[in-house]
Length: 185
Image (cartoon, rainbow, N blue to C red; front, side, top):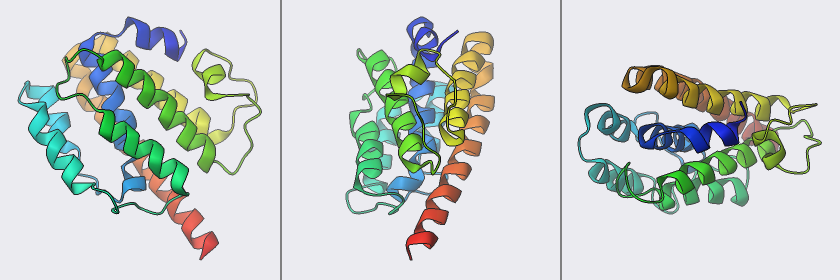
């Protein structure tokens, strides 16, 4: 099943986790540490207030806190994910946010991947076109699919494993950002 189809079929929790996981993997671009979004993950697990954690994350990742990882465009894409996050995980528009986060995260990975991706856009990848995909984009696409499948197949029990997938992706992106910074410095 394509990523587009998985997003279309996901429930509110799956959509919230999908969007949060995309944002979480891109936190290094905003200069955030590994724990900055942890309150949002916790609120999805226990049903507590999401808005307080969101405001705290926005404050921690405020303007000017960027990680300098790959240029203005990648940071701007990550910031838009954070800024557009709904005030509640079940708010109207959660599907649009999750979808936008998916696109933004794939674009970020595509921009940071030193290997060329011959696809005309990330939409091709999201719809199932995986021929000659660049490695960083391929890995991000797999992570997004895995997160949605975990939530669809295991419900709330899949949340911990989805966080693990996101953590792995964040480490990969942090390494890519670090390598690029060393190459420029």
